[in-house]
Image (cartoon, rainbow, N blue to C red):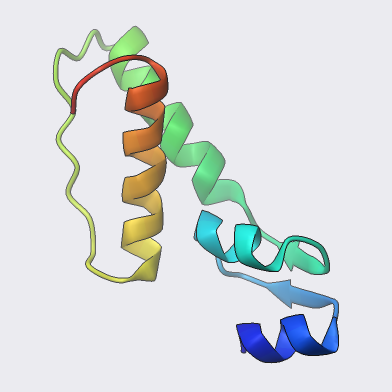
Length: 83
């Protein structure tokens, strides 16, 4: 649907949570972005509150899972930590 939405500049409501979907469509896409916030918050919580020394990332091999994985890896990189 993304190419049609972009071409037609159609405001669209989505339940998709993969950050790449939002980046691609930029404006006119409305919906849930909670997974982006949740994955980053869970990573920070594990490190800061649970004193985790390492973070393992298990994810579904689809757009939803890859989106969450990418958020976690970016959060670790932003905190200067290896995964």
